[in-house]
Amino acid sequence: MTPTDAISTARHAPRHSASPVRTLPNATKWIALAVAAALVLGAAAIAVGSERSLRAPAETKGLGAGANRGVSEPPAMAATTAPTVPTATVQPSPTAPATITIVAVGDLLFDSRPRRMIDAKGPAAPLAKVASRLSRADLTIANLESTLSNRGAPVLGKPASLIFNGNPKGALTLASAGIDVVSNANNHAMDHGRIALADTIAALDKVGIKHAGAGMNTTQAWAPAYLVVKGRRVAYVAATQVVPSYFLPSATRAGVANGHDMKRLVATVKAARKKADIVIVSVHWGIERSYTANAGQKHDARALIDAGADLVLSHHPHVLQGIDTYKGKLIAYSLGNFLFPYKSASGRESFILGFEYGRKGVANITAVPVYLGAWGEPIVQTGARARTILGRLAAASKPMGTKVTIKNNIGYIRP
Image 1 (cartoon, rainbow, N blue to C red):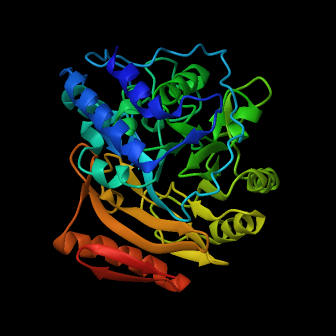
Image 2 (cartoon, rainbow, N blue to C red):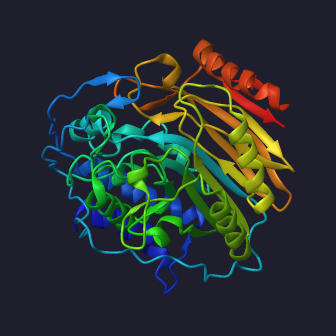
């Protein structure tokens, strides 16, 4: 059994059933993660790839993939293969717990320094310092800001410095840290074309990580991910408002869900509302390096909540933005970077958003400050740097009427 196969088996062992909807009991998650982490850490060999440099903040040149040795990668998925779109068929238990814990983080990049870190130190390394915090939640969410493939050609019409192709072993990184579902709806999902996107989806499927926002055709790109978490049905809807025209899908062309099509996005949320107890929406949006959510973000977040979303947890600006509420629902306009070798200090400041979601909505909202290290890896902060990061979050949230109280290196968020 390869390490990849072992992780897939560990994450799925208690859940063999005909249903395509994923069930995540917390105890099972911990057991699976312990097995996965041990296998990942023991399997990686040192294979340092060719040096590639960052040319500008958030702009990494994709120079093609080198050999990846030591960890068996998920088999490449044929570019013409269309993954099965999941449907919600599992019913929650009548005795399902009223409350689940959720953690959300921002952009994860597996190209450049994170790619080399995996080759040098193993797949678990990039998220090793935060894995325990991510794993302890019942549901952990992130944005996958690159493909996971060694195949495909750089897309035409885009600067080379903005083209990413992430290490395929990044799927093992996500699994070892307990990440359950990711958004593929962003402006890098098709950087190396259809074949690399297909490989990415295959890699995620191999380790049991759900995904939404991109697919082999329009239907798949718009399909929500469905999970069952401690007996509660969760729908995850993803779209991007930062979308090159050549990333738009058709009936026969791969692509991403176009978040500018608010009519379809609202309809997707309304349909998901009929199938799920909790609807979470992720939109890739906003202005890069801006701490302030713009009017369009605020308008669209409210429209999504009016359509039935319980949570709007988003990204793209590469810096954190404020926490807001509307009709008692939680909005995080930008969760910032999370695994990203950003050059500026502002782009390395981020946080882990955590909260409980129960029958009365969101409670006990916290922010754990992190700073991204030399490889772009997240490291939990204390002391002065923690206060600086949380102070930025407090300042960005204050105009929305949200108060952030800093105590013992944690931000306690009160709408």
